Length: 169
Length: 171
Image 1 (cartoon, rainbow over the protein chains, first blue to last red):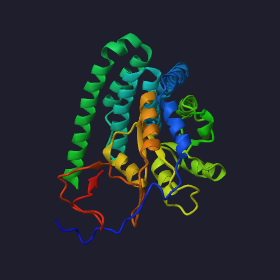
Image 2: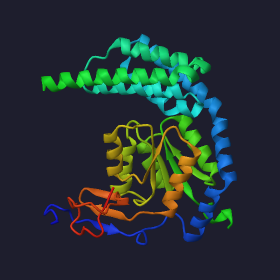
Image 3: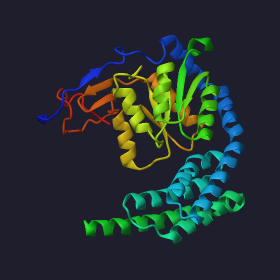
Image 4: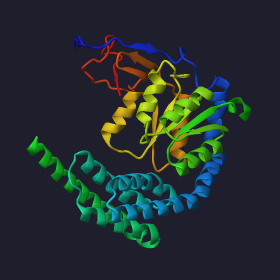
């Protein structure tokens, strides 16, 4: 195999040629710390103590999202959906996170492609998100299935937008 | 081994969501990193770097006005950067391939997917400490070597002038 004539000149800087994050002794101590069961337990406790606070925050974002939909404020919808999808699972609201992720993908992609957004797709997501955020047992039982179905709808809608854009290009 | 050996470690968390920032701070603290600075976007992160040169950065991807990709690019490429070799972990819920590739090509060291889990964070930190990667400097890129795996059957195309069939690896 011959090399491409365009293969760029790359300088490789070895790990001994730049400052390490930790000196060898500190690195070893840090790795030991990371491997301890107590360390994991402490970190999981830290995660757990934030759960209630994050859960309140997510519910606040859901309310803001509902208001944005009422006001047809697309920019705020994208922002709130983004906040929800990033945080919800760390509050134990996995279904809410997945639903918000689908909503974000749909609105963000459609607006970037300058395509009109389908209000029904948004409403379906908002209703599901609001319900999953407040009815934990329903969310646990059906949230994942609803998210999968709505994700399929988003994929279908985005494919339709892409087809239209390809035709008009 | 005494914990004091690494207690000088300084981390910077760049994240626009105040709750996620607090979560990351708590986790890092629980894992033994006590010096943690925070910034709400890439510009603030760059300013913070001038005050306290971090040994480790955790950054979000989507932030305004300066996102995690541009922040990473500035840390790696800017002449004003106080530590272009600093390990950068990008915390992201984005699964879109193009954005992840853009982040990797900006010089991100590791990715940490949301939702954050303790095990995933520990794995990323251990990877950075245990297996630091060489840096690659060329016209279009400066950052950790993006090739992680050796592939015996790889037959090109060669991307570097000194690649050989014996040492080729792919990202």
